[in-house]
Length: 444
Image (cartoon, rainbow, N blue to C red; front, side, top):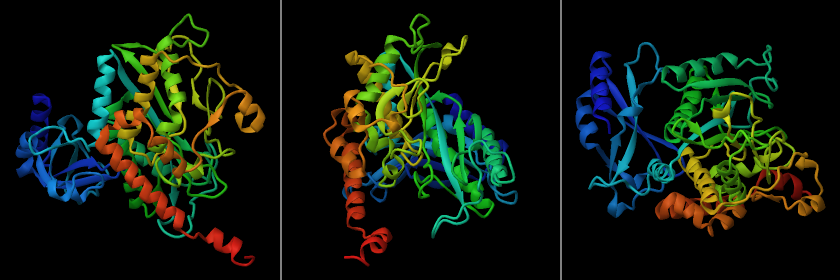
Protein backbone atom coordinates (compact mmCIF):
# COMPACT_ATOMS: atom_id res chain seq x y z
CA UNK A 1 0.00 0.00 0.00
CA UNK A 2 1.45 3.34 -1.09
CA UNK A 3 1.57 6.01 1.61
CA UNK A 4 1.14 8.60 -1.14
CA UNK A 5 -2.08 6.94 -2.32
CA UNK A 6 -3.37 6.75 1.26
CA UNK A 7 -2.68 10.42 1.88
CA UNK A 8 -4.38 11.32 -1.41
CA UNK A 9 -7.54 9.40 -0.41
CA UNK A 10 -7.79 11.00 3.02
CA UNK A 11 -7.12 14.48 1.63
CA UNK A 12 -9.59 14.11 -1.25
CA UNK A 13 -12.36 12.82 0.99
CA UNK A 14 -12.05 15.94 3.13
CA UNK A 15 -11.73 18.39 0.22
CA UNK A 16 -14.64 16.96 -1.77
CA UNK A 17 -16.90 16.52 1.27
CA UNK A 18 -17.41 12.83 0.54
CA UNK A 19 -19.87 11.36 3.02
CA UNK A 20 -19.65 7.60 2.38
CA UNK A 21 -17.02 5.20 1.04
CA UNK A 22 -18.07 1.84 -0.35
CA UNK A 23 -15.63 -1.02 0.12
CA UNK A 24 -15.90 -3.55 -2.70
CA UNK A 25 -14.74 -7.14 -3.11
CA UNK A 26 -16.04 -10.28 -4.86
CA UNK A 27 -17.07 -13.72 -3.78
CA UNK A 28 -15.70 -16.82 -5.51
CA UNK A 29 -18.36 -16.67 -8.23
CA UNK A 30 -17.59 -13.05 -9.09
CA UNK A 31 -20.59 -11.35 -7.48
CA UNK A 32 -19.68 -7.90 -6.25
CA UNK A 33 -19.98 -7.41 -2.48
CA UNK A 34 -19.95 -4.10 -0.69
CA UNK A 35 -20.38 -2.37 2.61
CA UNK A 36 -20.29 1.32 3.36
CA UNK A 37 -18.24 3.23 5.90
CA UNK A 38 -18.46 6.87 6.90
CA UNK A 39 -15.56 9.27 6.59
CA UNK A 40 -15.02 9.03 10.35
CA UNK A 41 -13.99 5.38 9.94
CA UNK A 42 -11.76 5.96 6.92
CA UNK A 43 -8.33 6.32 8.53
CA UNK A 44 -8.82 3.22 10.69
CA UNK A 45 -10.07 1.27 7.67
CA UNK A 46 -7.02 2.30 5.64
CA UNK A 47 -4.54 1.35 8.35
CA UNK A 48 -6.16 -1.71 9.92
CA UNK A 49 -8.98 -2.81 7.59
CA UNK A 50 -12.60 -3.48 8.47
CA UNK A 51 -13.80 -6.75 9.97
CA UNK A 52 -16.75 -8.69 8.55
CA UNK A 53 -18.38 -12.14 8.70
CA UNK A 54 -16.80 -14.26 5.97
CA UNK A 55 -19.15 -17.20 6.51
CA UNK A 56 -21.92 -15.22 4.78
CA UNK A 57 -19.88 -14.91 1.54
CA UNK A 58 -20.01 -17.66 -1.10
CA UNK A 59 -16.77 -19.64 -1.09
CA UNK A 60 -15.28 -17.86 1.92
CA UNK A 61 -14.76 -19.15 5.47
CA UNK A 62 -16.64 -21.75 7.47
CA UNK A 63 -18.77 -20.41 10.30
CA UNK A 64 -16.29 -21.52 12.97
CA UNK A 65 -13.52 -19.46 11.37
CA UNK A 66 -15.58 -16.66 9.87
CA UNK A 67 -13.79 -13.46 10.93
CA UNK A 68 -12.28 -11.70 7.90
CA UNK A 69 -10.72 -8.28 7.29
CA UNK A 70 -11.37 -6.11 4.22
CA UNK A 71 -8.33 -3.88 3.60
CA UNK A 72 -9.00 -1.06 1.09
CA UNK A 73 -6.57 -0.63 -1.79
CA UNK A 74 -6.15 3.18 -2.02
CA UNK A 75 -4.93 2.99 -5.63
CA UNK A 76 -8.52 2.00 -6.59
CA UNK A 77 -10.15 5.06 -5.00
CA UNK A 78 -12.65 6.87 -7.22
CA UNK A 79 -16.01 8.63 -7.14
CA UNK A 80 -19.20 6.90 -8.25
CA UNK A 81 -20.59 9.21 -10.93
CA UNK A 82 -23.96 7.51 -11.36
CA UNK A 83 -25.44 8.95 -8.14
CA UNK A 84 -28.35 11.39 -8.41
CA UNK A 85 -27.59 15.10 -7.93
CA UNK A 86 -29.44 15.32 -4.62
CA UNK A 87 -27.63 12.30 -3.11
CA UNK A 88 -24.45 12.56 -1.00
CA UNK A 89 -21.12 12.12 -2.79
CA UNK A 90 -20.00 8.48 -2.60
CA UNK A 91 -16.60 6.99 -3.42
CA UNK A 92 -15.41 3.40 -3.65
CA UNK A 93 -12.27 1.32 -3.16
CA UNK A 94 -11.61 -2.33 -3.91
CA UNK A 95 -10.40 -4.37 -0.97
CA UNK A 96 -7.96 -7.17 -0.38
CA UNK A 97 -9.37 -9.78 2.00
CA UNK A 98 -7.11 -10.75 4.89
CA UNK A 99 -7.06 -13.24 7.75
CA UNK A 100 -7.25 -11.74 11.23
CA UNK A 101 -3.45 -12.03 11.49
CA UNK A 102 -3.06 -9.79 8.42
CA UNK A 103 -2.04 -12.51 5.94
CA UNK A 104 -3.80 -12.72 2.56
CA UNK A 105 -6.94 -14.87 2.59
CA UNK A 106 -6.66 -17.87 0.26
CA UNK A 107 -10.32 -17.57 -0.75
CA UNK A 108 -9.98 -14.03 -2.13
CA UNK A 109 -10.20 -14.03 -5.97
CA UNK A 110 -8.22 -10.78 -6.11
CA UNK A 111 -5.38 -12.44 -4.21
CA UNK A 112 -5.47 -15.44 -6.57
CA UNK A 113 -4.89 -13.09 -9.51
CA UNK A 114 -2.11 -11.29 -7.63
CA UNK A 115 -0.33 -14.59 -7.05
CA UNK A 116 -0.48 -15.47 -10.75
CA UNK A 117 0.78 -12.01 -11.66
CA UNK A 118 3.68 -12.51 -9.25
CA UNK A 119 4.57 -15.75 -11.07
CA UNK A 120 4.60 -13.84 -14.35
CA UNK A 121 6.75 -11.12 -12.77
CA UNK A 122 9.26 -13.72 -11.58
CA UNK A 123 9.57 -14.77 -15.23
CA UNK A 124 10.11 -11.12 -16.20
CA UNK A 125 6.63 -10.41 -17.58
CA UNK A 126 3.75 -8.00 -17.01
CA UNK A 127 0.35 -9.31 -18.11
CA UNK A 128 -1.90 -6.95 -20.06
CA UNK A 129 -5.50 -7.64 -21.06
CA UNK A 130 -8.27 -5.88 -22.96
CA UNK A 131 -11.76 -7.39 -22.61
CA UNK A 132 -14.74 -6.74 -24.89
CA UNK A 133 -17.86 -6.90 -22.71
CA UNK A 134 -21.12 -7.69 -24.50
CA UNK A 135 -24.49 -7.36 -22.81
CA UNK A 136 -28.23 -6.86 -23.43
CA UNK A 137 -30.78 -4.22 -22.44
CA UNK A 138 -34.25 -5.52 -21.60
CA UNK A 139 -37.47 -3.83 -20.52
CA UNK A 140 -37.50 -5.76 -17.24
CA UNK A 141 -35.52 -8.36 -15.28
CA UNK A 142 -38.19 -11.06 -15.05
CA UNK A 143 -40.38 -12.94 -17.49
CA UNK A 144 -39.56 -13.57 -21.14
CA UNK A 145 -36.81 -11.14 -22.26
CA UNK A 146 -38.29 -8.09 -23.97
CA UNK A 147 -35.78 -6.21 -26.12
CA UNK A 148 -35.59 -2.45 -26.59
CA UNK A 149 -34.59 -2.40 -30.27
CA UNK A 150 -34.25 -4.37 -33.47
CA UNK A 151 -30.77 -3.08 -34.24
CA UNK A 152 -27.90 -5.11 -35.61
CA UNK A 153 -24.11 -4.99 -35.75
CA UNK A 154 -22.74 -1.42 -35.67
CA UNK A 155 -26.21 0.03 -36.29
CA UNK A 156 -26.63 3.76 -35.78
CA UNK A 157 -30.27 4.21 -36.69
CA UNK A 158 -33.54 4.79 -34.84
CA UNK A 159 -33.49 1.01 -34.30
CA UNK A 160 -30.67 1.53 -31.77
CA UNK A 161 -32.68 3.33 -29.11
CA UNK A 162 -30.19 2.40 -26.38
CA UNK A 163 -27.27 4.44 -27.75
CA UNK A 164 -27.81 7.21 -25.14
CA UNK A 165 -27.61 4.62 -22.35
CA UNK A 166 -24.39 3.25 -23.75
CA UNK A 167 -22.90 6.72 -24.18
CA UNK A 168 -23.83 7.71 -20.64
CA UNK A 169 -22.15 4.53 -19.40
CA UNK A 170 -18.93 5.31 -21.29
CA UNK A 171 -18.86 8.85 -19.86
CA UNK A 172 -19.35 7.47 -16.33
CA UNK A 173 -16.54 4.95 -16.79
CA UNK A 174 -14.16 7.62 -18.04
CA UNK A 175 -14.99 9.80 -15.02
CA UNK A 176 -13.79 6.88 -12.89
CA UNK A 177 -10.52 6.67 -14.83
CA UNK A 178 -11.53 3.62 -16.86
CA UNK A 179 -10.54 4.11 -20.51
CA UNK A 180 -12.95 2.87 -23.15
CA UNK A 181 -11.61 2.02 -26.59
CA UNK A 182 -14.98 1.86 -28.34
CA UNK A 183 -18.63 0.95 -27.90
CA UNK A 184 -21.29 -0.15 -30.38
CA UNK A 185 -24.46 -2.09 -31.02
CA UNK A 186 -23.81 -5.82 -31.39
CA UNK A 187 -25.36 -8.44 -33.70
CA UNK A 188 -28.44 -9.42 -31.70
CA UNK A 189 -31.42 -7.15 -30.99
CA UNK A 190 -30.79 -4.93 -27.94
CA UNK A 191 -27.23 -6.27 -27.62
CA UNK A 192 -24.33 -3.90 -27.02
CA UNK A 193 -20.57 -3.98 -26.49
CA UNK A 194 -18.09 -1.88 -24.54
CA UNK A 195 -14.38 -2.50 -25.15
CA UNK A 196 -12.06 -1.48 -22.33
CA UNK A 197 -8.63 -0.20 -23.31
CA UNK A 198 -5.68 -2.52 -22.59
CA UNK A 199 -4.40 -2.37 -19.01
CA UNK A 200 -2.46 -4.41 -16.47
CA UNK A 201 -4.56 -7.43 -15.46
CA UNK A 202 -5.33 -6.56 -11.82
CA UNK A 203 -6.45 -3.05 -12.70
CA UNK A 204 -8.48 -4.49 -15.58
CA UNK A 205 -10.25 -7.03 -13.37
CA UNK A 206 -11.25 -4.15 -11.08
CA UNK A 207 -12.37 -2.18 -14.15
CA UNK A 208 -14.41 -5.07 -15.54
CA UNK A 209 -16.28 -5.42 -12.23
CA UNK A 210 -16.86 -1.66 -12.18
CA UNK A 211 -18.05 -1.69 -15.79
CA UNK A 212 -20.66 -4.38 -15.14
CA UNK A 213 -22.11 -2.47 -12.19
CA UNK A 214 -22.04 0.86 -14.06
CA UNK A 215 -23.91 -0.61 -17.04
CA UNK A 216 -26.59 -1.93 -14.69
CA UNK A 217 -26.84 1.23 -12.57
CA UNK A 218 -27.32 3.53 -15.56
CA UNK A 219 -29.85 1.17 -17.14
CA UNK A 220 -31.78 1.19 -13.87
CA UNK A 221 -31.79 5.00 -13.82
CA UNK A 222 -33.58 4.90 -17.18
CA UNK A 223 -36.08 2.25 -16.13
CA UNK A 224 -34.60 -0.69 -18.03
CA UNK A 225 -32.55 -3.74 -17.11
CA UNK A 226 -29.06 -4.65 -18.33
CA UNK A 227 -27.94 -8.27 -18.31
CA UNK A 228 -24.58 -9.99 -18.85
CA UNK A 229 -26.29 -13.38 -19.10
CA UNK A 230 -24.35 -15.27 -21.80
CA UNK A 231 -27.37 -16.51 -23.80
CA UNK A 232 -30.66 -14.81 -22.89
CA UNK A 233 -32.34 -15.05 -26.33
CA UNK A 234 -33.10 -18.22 -28.26
CA UNK A 235 -31.77 -18.30 -31.84
CA UNK A 236 -29.73 -15.12 -31.37
CA UNK A 237 -26.05 -14.55 -30.69
CA UNK A 238 -25.01 -14.73 -27.06
CA UNK A 239 -22.76 -12.32 -25.16
CA UNK A 240 -19.04 -12.99 -24.99
CA UNK A 241 -16.05 -11.33 -23.40
CA UNK A 242 -13.33 -11.75 -26.00
CA UNK A 243 -10.13 -11.11 -24.06
CA UNK A 244 -7.09 -9.64 -25.82
CA UNK A 245 -3.87 -10.42 -23.97
CA UNK A 246 -0.11 -10.06 -24.18
CA UNK A 247 3.03 -10.13 -22.07
CA UNK A 248 5.40 -7.20 -21.80
CA UNK A 249 9.02 -6.99 -20.64
CA UNK A 250 9.32 -3.41 -19.51
CA UNK A 251 7.99 -1.31 -22.39
CA UNK A 252 8.60 -4.04 -24.97
CA UNK A 253 5.89 -6.40 -26.16
CA UNK A 254 7.29 -9.89 -25.65
CA UNK A 255 4.82 -11.26 -28.22
CA UNK A 256 6.33 -9.37 -31.20
CA UNK A 257 8.99 -10.65 -33.57
CA UNK A 258 9.56 -8.57 -36.74
CA UNK A 259 11.25 -11.49 -38.52
CA UNK A 260 8.52 -14.08 -38.01
CA UNK A 261 5.98 -14.61 -40.82
CA UNK A 262 3.15 -14.12 -38.30
CA UNK A 263 5.11 -11.41 -36.42
CA UNK A 264 4.87 -13.64 -33.35
CA UNK A 265 7.79 -14.37 -31.04
CA UNK A 266 8.59 -17.83 -29.70
CA UNK A 267 7.16 -16.63 -26.38
CA UNK A 268 3.88 -15.63 -28.06
CA UNK A 269 3.61 -18.93 -29.91
CA UNK A 270 4.19 -20.98 -26.76
CA UNK A 271 1.75 -18.78 -24.83
CA UNK A 272 -0.96 -19.26 -27.47
CA UNK A 273 -0.19 -22.99 -27.57
CA UNK A 274 -0.80 -23.02 -23.81
CA UNK A 275 -4.22 -21.40 -24.27
CA UNK A 276 -5.08 -23.93 -26.96
CA UNK A 277 -3.82 -26.98 -25.06
CA UNK A 278 -5.53 -26.09 -21.76
CA UNK A 279 -8.69 -24.47 -23.18
CA UNK A 280 -11.01 -27.27 -22.08
CA UNK A 281 -9.58 -27.29 -18.55
CA UNK A 282 -10.08 -23.57 -18.02
CA UNK A 283 -13.46 -23.29 -19.78
CA UNK A 284 -15.40 -23.75 -16.53
CA UNK A 285 -13.71 -20.63 -15.13
CA UNK A 286 -14.07 -18.37 -18.17
CA UNK A 287 -17.56 -19.74 -19.00
CA UNK A 288 -18.79 -20.71 -15.58
CA UNK A 289 -22.58 -21.00 -15.78
CA UNK A 290 -25.03 -23.58 -17.13
CA UNK A 291 -26.21 -20.89 -19.54
CA UNK A 292 -22.63 -20.27 -20.77
CA UNK A 293 -22.78 -23.52 -22.73
CA UNK A 294 -25.98 -22.43 -24.52
CA UNK A 295 -23.78 -19.71 -26.06
CA UNK A 296 -20.86 -22.02 -26.88
CA UNK A 297 -22.55 -23.83 -29.79
CA UNK A 298 -21.78 -23.70 -33.52
CA UNK A 299 -23.62 -21.19 -35.69
CA UNK A 300 -23.74 -18.09 -33.49
CA UNK A 301 -20.21 -16.71 -33.89
CA UNK A 302 -19.17 -18.33 -30.60
CA UNK A 303 -15.88 -20.27 -30.60
CA UNK A 304 -16.34 -23.96 -29.98
CA UNK A 305 -13.47 -25.59 -31.83
CA UNK A 306 -10.00 -25.54 -30.29
CA UNK A 307 -7.68 -23.91 -32.81
CA UNK A 308 -6.02 -20.60 -33.58
CA UNK A 309 -6.01 -18.30 -36.59
CA UNK A 310 -5.32 -14.77 -37.76
CA UNK A 311 -8.34 -13.88 -39.89
CA UNK A 312 -10.68 -16.71 -38.93
CA UNK A 313 -13.21 -15.68 -36.27
CA UNK A 314 -14.51 -19.22 -35.89
CA UNK A 315 -11.25 -20.15 -34.16
CA UNK A 316 -10.88 -20.16 -30.38
CA UNK A 317 -7.79 -17.96 -30.40
CA UNK A 318 -7.36 -15.18 -32.93
CA UNK A 319 -4.20 -13.17 -33.55
CA UNK A 320 -5.16 -9.80 -35.05
CA UNK A 321 -3.13 -8.93 -38.15
CA UNK A 322 0.04 -6.90 -37.53
CA UNK A 323 0.01 -3.27 -38.60
CA UNK A 324 3.40 -1.65 -39.36
CA UNK A 325 4.64 0.45 -36.46
CA UNK A 326 2.17 -1.18 -34.04
CA UNK A 327 4.44 -3.76 -32.40
CA UNK A 328 2.98 -3.03 -28.96
CA UNK A 329 -0.46 -4.06 -30.24
CA UNK A 330 0.63 -7.64 -31.01
CA UNK A 331 -1.70 -9.84 -28.98
CA UNK A 332 -3.81 -12.98 -28.76
CA UNK A 333 -7.59 -12.79 -28.52
CA UNK A 334 -9.15 -15.60 -26.46
CA UNK A 335 -12.76 -15.81 -27.60
CA UNK A 336 -14.60 -18.27 -25.35
CA UNK A 337 -14.90 -16.23 -22.09
CA UNK A 338 -18.25 -14.61 -21.38
CA UNK A 339 -18.91 -11.44 -19.36
CA UNK A 340 -20.64 -13.27 -16.49
CA UNK A 341 -17.37 -14.84 -15.34
CA UNK A 342 -15.30 -13.81 -12.32
CA UNK A 343 -12.62 -11.71 -14.11
CA UNK A 344 -10.03 -12.22 -11.35
CA UNK A 345 -10.23 -15.98 -11.76
CA UNK A 346 -10.66 -15.87 -15.55
CA UNK A 347 -7.53 -13.76 -16.04
CA UNK A 348 -5.71 -16.06 -13.60
CA UNK A 349 -6.37 -19.27 -15.53
CA UNK A 350 -5.71 -17.68 -18.93
CA UNK A 351 -2.35 -16.42 -17.71
CA UNK A 352 -1.54 -19.76 -16.07
CA UNK A 353 -2.25 -21.62 -19.32
CA UNK A 354 -0.09 -19.23 -21.32
CA UNK A 355 2.81 -19.32 -18.86
CA UNK A 356 2.66 -23.12 -18.80
CA UNK A 357 3.08 -23.07 -22.56
CA UNK A 358 6.16 -20.86 -22.23
CA UNK A 359 7.68 -22.89 -19.39
CA UNK A 360 7.17 -26.21 -21.20
CA UNK A 361 8.06 -24.84 -24.64
CA UNK A 362 4.77 -25.89 -26.27
CA UNK A 363 4.81 -25.92 -30.06
CA UNK A 364 2.07 -23.99 -31.81
CA UNK A 365 0.32 -25.90 -34.60
CA UNK A 366 -0.40 -24.24 -37.93
CA UNK A 367 -3.29 -21.75 -37.97
CA UNK A 368 -6.69 -22.87 -39.25
CA UNK A 369 -7.96 -20.17 -41.61
CA UNK A 370 -10.95 -22.13 -42.97
CA UNK A 371 -14.46 -21.72 -41.55
CA UNK A 372 -14.43 -24.45 -38.93
CA UNK A 373 -18.20 -24.23 -38.39
CA UNK A 374 -18.72 -25.81 -41.81
CA UNK A 375 -16.17 -28.61 -41.48
CA UNK A 376 -17.41 -32.18 -41.35
CA UNK A 377 -16.73 -34.38 -38.34
CA UNK A 378 -14.34 -36.37 -40.50
CA UNK A 379 -12.37 -33.28 -41.47
CA UNK A 380 -12.27 -32.00 -37.89
CA UNK A 381 -10.85 -35.32 -36.79
CA UNK A 382 -8.31 -35.34 -39.61
CA UNK A 383 -7.16 -31.82 -38.69
CA UNK A 384 -7.04 -32.81 -35.00
CA UNK A 385 -9.40 -29.98 -34.04
CA UNK A 386 -11.05 -30.73 -30.73
CA UNK A 387 -13.97 -28.88 -29.14
CA UNK A 388 -14.73 -27.26 -25.81
CA UNK A 389 -16.94 -29.04 -23.26
CA UNK A 390 -20.56 -29.08 -24.42
CA UNK A 391 -22.12 -28.49 -21.02
CA UNK A 392 -21.29 -27.39 -17.51
CA UNK A 393 -21.33 -31.06 -16.49
CA UNK A 394 -18.67 -31.93 -19.08
CA UNK A 395 -16.61 -28.92 -18.02
CA UNK A 396 -16.71 -29.97 -14.36
CA UNK A 397 -15.46 -33.46 -15.25
CA UNK A 398 -12.50 -32.02 -17.18
CA UNK A 399 -11.53 -29.33 -14.65
CA UNK A 400 -11.71 -31.63 -11.62
CA UNK A 401 -8.63 -33.40 -13.00
CA UNK A 402 -6.73 -30.21 -13.88
CA UNK A 403 -3.51 -29.57 -11.98
CA UNK A 404 -3.10 -26.30 -13.85
CA UNK A 405 -6.43 -24.83 -12.70
CA UNK A 406 -5.90 -26.04 -9.15
CA UNK A 407 -2.49 -24.35 -9.01
CA UNK A 408 -3.82 -21.16 -10.61
CA UNK A 409 -6.76 -20.79 -8.21
CA UNK A 410 -5.24 -22.37 -5.11
CA UNK A 411 -6.73 -25.32 -3.24
CA UNK A 412 -9.35 -23.28 -1.35
CA UNK A 413 -10.92 -21.50 -4.33
CA UNK A 414 -10.58 -24.56 -6.57
CA UNK A 415 -12.50 -26.80 -4.16
CA UNK A 416 -15.18 -24.21 -3.35
CA UNK A 417 -15.66 -23.31 -7.00
CA UNK A 418 -16.00 -26.92 -8.15
CA UNK A 419 -18.39 -27.72 -5.27
CA UNK A 420 -20.60 -24.77 -6.23
CA UNK A 421 -20.61 -25.77 -9.91
CA UNK A 422 -21.65 -29.32 -9.02
CA UNK A 423 -24.60 -27.96 -7.06
CA UNK A 424 -25.58 -25.72 -9.98
CA UNK A 425 -25.34 -28.63 -12.42
CA UNK A 426 -27.41 -30.91 -10.20
CA UNK A 427 -30.13 -28.27 -9.86
CA UNK A 428 -30.20 -27.86 -13.63
CA UNK A 429 -30.21 -31.62 -14.34
CA UNK A 430 -33.30 -32.29 -12.24
CA UNK A 431 -35.24 -29.25 -13.48
CA UNK A 432 -38.12 -30.03 -15.86
CA UNK A 433 -38.17 -27.24 -18.43
CA UNK A 434 -41.04 -25.79 -20.41
CA UNK A 435 -39.41 -27.22 -23.53
CA UNK A 436 -39.76 -30.76 -22.15
CA UNK A 437 -43.38 -30.21 -21.15
CA UNK A 438 -44.30 -28.82 -24.58
CA UNK A 439 -42.30 -31.45 -26.45
CA UNK A 440 -43.03 -34.67 -24.56
CA UNK A 441 -46.19 -34.34 -22.47
CA UNK A 442 -48.56 -34.61 -25.45
CA UNK A 443 -46.83 -37.63 -26.98
CA UNK A 444 -45.44 -39.73 -24.14
